[in-house]
Image (cartoon, rainbow, N blue to C red; front, side, top):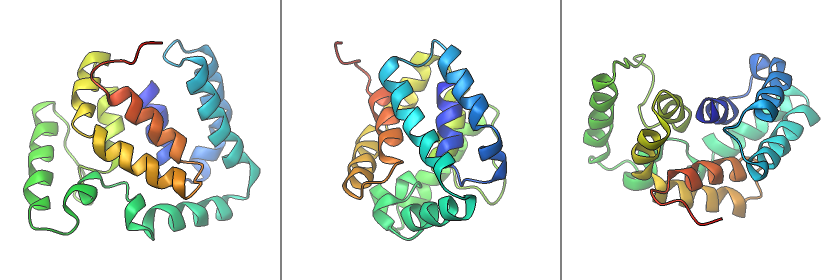
Length: 171
């Protein structure tokens, strides 16, 4: 449930998302998958989503993720840019998904963070961490970039980055 919720929050905001903010809050409060600091981060983004009209939230989202390459949610972009080596990385990721029975729609790139999180949610906690650890440096850089821009999405990406580490930090 943790990664599925983050996936929804990092995807393009629409009426459907705003209509389930209350449900996300409820699941977050009831679920043992979230520690108190994670709940605070999620609550902050949910407050942001509810504080503005949908068109403004959508405009902010586009300005953040679609117009600033350093904020791209396509993770291989951060590794390869538009280099020819990005193609094989995307193919490898698509093949990896297929091994688990996930078939992508023809218009989806496999490195889109919300898709990666949807997939991670289908795995057990340890499997998800191992899968996501390959992206931890990219996630850290993306979170740093979003934090520098004071984006409300930065802390959400930071949660993913923290969970992607193979060794949990001592509490």
